Length: 291
Image 1 (tube, rainbow, N blue to C red):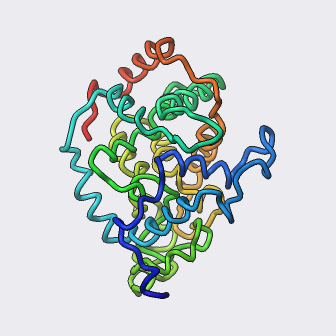
Image 2 (cartoon, rainbow, N blue to C red):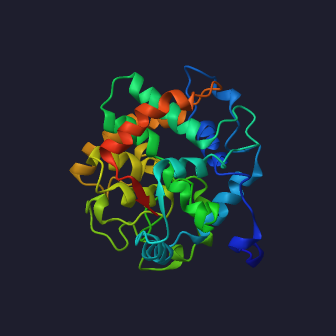
């Protein structure tokens, strides 16, 4: 690897907004019933070079030590307190202006997800999970770079799977050359269970810890692992999962289509939906959340 290929985080602003990564997921996992695959951007040669540059930074800097540092920094939840609707208001500023297909803000995406879940008659905690699943992106309030907020997630502390998007970019990650971390199991034991595995840092992990005292376990799995595509799509980390993980991942797989395919050009009417969701939030969560 040429030294010039190793980038520093400040050298690239990899995405125009956080939604570019989510939009890119549709290129990789299109819904055949609604749209032919060839109508989506080609992931091998994406129209936006920013996607690959995003993963160049993500794969280089998401190390085992980095994850420990971020957990120590953010999981004290001592930075700010906000009513949930104020968190939604912040997320509304994160619109992907470069998305050619849809121009909806984050709250509208969350409401579309939760309304699709609600329409299918799922339990109210499942509906609430749809509403909350991306709220961890409030990490941007604290100046976190995009590669430490969104992106496909994966275990750190063991060998990086070749099923992760752009696996060749892990050559930049020092853990790939560290004998403590670059074997199949690394710091873990066979089938130790994901509760003992450290995932790459981002909005999924952050929100899981924020919500773990309030929501049922299936909801927590959905939140924590909804971006763990290398497992719930590719089954690349079966050697770390235990039987309980496999049972809970049925919920993750049930949630994923709502996240990816509920987007519609017709925005939800927030004023009409707010009373229902305000009552739902009050049922499960405290009046303010600690960030």
